[in-house]
Amino acid sequence: MQDRQKTQELTLVLGATGKTGRRVAERLEARGHAVRRGSRSASPSFDWHNEKGWDSSLEGVTSVYITYAPDLAMPGAADAIQAFVDLARKRGVKRLVLLSGRGEAEAQTCERIVQSSGLEWTIVRASWFNQNFSEGAFVDMVLNGAITLPAGDQAEPFVDADDIADVVVAAFTEAHHHGKIYEVSGPRLMTIADVAADLSRATGREIAYVNVPHDGFVAEVANSGAPRDVVWMLDYLFSTVLDGRNAHLTDGVQRALGRPPKDFADYARDVAASGVWERSQ
Image (cartoon, rainbow, N blue to C red; front, side, top):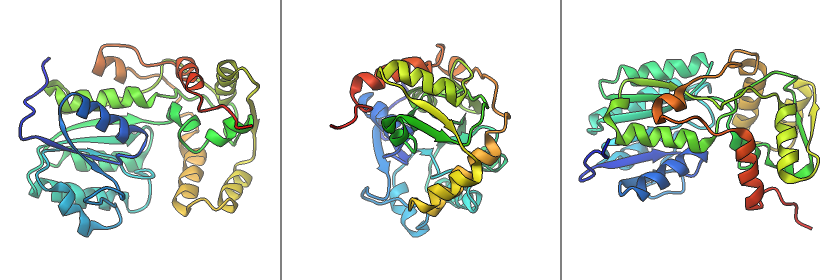
């Protein structure tokens, strides 16, 4: 299907410096779409905790990619999403794409807000990103040769942020994605031990998996000086979401894009070739 008419359309990409937002913005711009990058460092600035600044970010906007940091499960997220969606509708926004969380009741509450907005909508549900190990919280663990997490032997179908971005861009540029929920996953279930094995093969050095007690892990993260919301999110994810509820594959990438999702081993090989995991001497 051809891209929809680009003239007089402006897409606000929230979280534009994040894993998926940056990719979505780059892809839309490469296709000739006008993009406003929404972040605290942008002009106009967008901050979920400064509602007074939202209006400037929405001026002239027709579509919005909604990501909420650090997670839609955070206390207060639903209220913020409701307020933002209400304002977006008043400002003439026509289309919303929401990045949601698999297996998170709080995230599904936010989905319903978007679905009942009266606007065109698409939901993309994802859980653990491959890029957590190269751009996120666990990259230093890979660099140090030991992934130390309270994950036991629970399996998760890690999904690639590039696949998520491709689904989001399709939702903005192809009309038949409106009103769809795409629950996306990678092509196989993996434990963290499996992840460590793939990373070891890709980097050519041993990356171990060290299973640690949950409470001790959270305390260590807190003691490291991590922001309180990050500590809360990791506590929530490892105690609640990583309990087997998402230990099944989904066909969201295939349905949305007509191709299979990227495998973690391919992701690891590509990142290793980029030098991200090379330790400085």
